[in-house]
Image 1: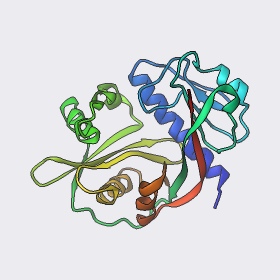
Image 2 (image 1 turned 60 degrees about the vertical axis):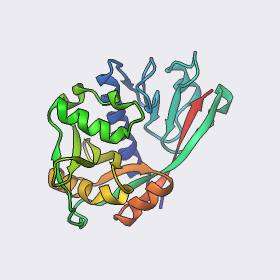
Image 3 (image 1 turned 90 degrees about the vertical axis):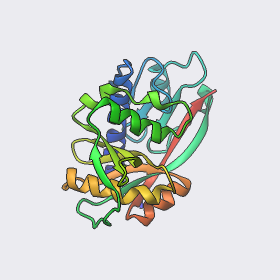
Length: 234
């Protein structure tokens, strides 16, 4: 069921996480009434803009980002924009997801910790990356952000087995970058939800997923809120 107010909370939370990630790479964004935007290209996988309210003005949004070269992207949080006239194509569609605060969690077989040093962050990033060469995306500046918690699940021998990022905002906590070294997201979610429940027991959990990852989130108590769309400039 579409829930506009919770989608707005999830979109704002996601924009704040994108802002944190961009700041860690030296790119400063700006929150406006309709969207968060960055004037220069953000880190890999992160958007140039995130809409914060339904009915954002497409032309004004595009004017605030760099479309001088290919690769600009817009997270259309309410799936209500048409950016095709500005040279964008739909990259993918997904669903915002929500889990109430205090919902039961399944005990994980993994121990967990909040990453708090550079060596642990590198081990986490290497596991998240899986050898694709993008582990440097996660920089030590994130460790200084009080609203960002990098969650590591580890096996009895101390090896990284799963992980995620939890980003706290005023009314929700967002979860992103969920991964498991072996298996799929079903391996990671019990650890992630256990950690989030202990760290932020009074906050609903939000995020977005699509495909098999959306199915996994549903198996762990998430409900869909409504669609979002990511546009990519050609």
